[in-house]
Image 1: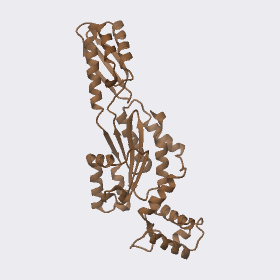
Image 2 (image 1 turned 120 degrees about the vertical axis):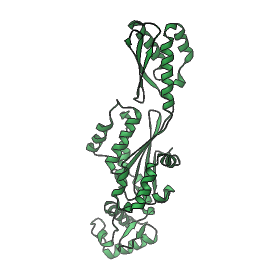
Image 3 (image 1 turned 30 degrees about the vertical axis):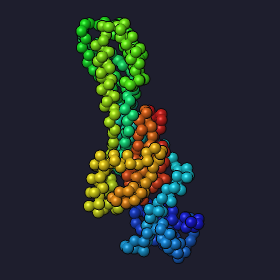
Image 4 (image 1 turned 90 degrees about the vertical axis):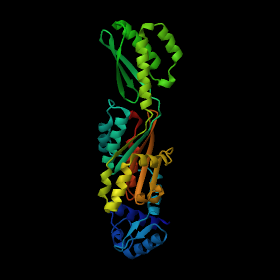
Length: 336
């Protein structure tokens, strides 16, 4: 494709992205950067149609970009540096999600919601959990003569509590000493990486604290079991109805039902090549009939040893430059 055809195609894509309406040669000719007559543009558009980059609609003399055109456009965008988010846009999502009092699921769910707000599209987040929960710290507080409260703070920001009943009283000095032993042996580790030989030695030297140790390890194991379940979040499902591509009620209903079926959505995501940093599938590249006019954009990152996929489900005519700039800035290591 020569430079002139490429410039015309990009102008058509830009106009169609903005309006969703077929684009005619006269409209393209109004773009001063093109610098061609309407007749010349019409001939070039005919060539682009014959090459499979444009589709002529039955409703007007205008044309719309094909899936082939969008694939070419996306590949060109990916080869260039796209614009970064503005400082105000960055502040919008940073202020909203930088609350480390929340656990991992809560934070990822919030990020998905912010992603939908930033783009005005349906967003998703999929956490493929590692199954290994690391303890950040453990606090032991005396609440009664024979009761202590164990507070577990995990590296995924989750907090667990357990009330432990003792066979006999324990003083503050003994409690603090045993807390130090537990933190030394458990902090920064998952239940599967605990050195039980060392812990056994510590326990044998402090037999009276066996009930505390057993209770702490039991609670730790329960948290690890819970962490094996993958999580999926979906935000802004109804936003797909804002676009003329889904003005047909039956088609929109079918798409919404697919998105609301978490099991089906998980199967869709797990069938994707999620070992790539960025996945963009356009139209029938998604192998799902109802996605024939949909773009699926997925960004894969690692957060606290868990593989996380952020995604957008949107009409094929989205502003890919804007979307990719959001994905490029959306996840930052220093958030975690």
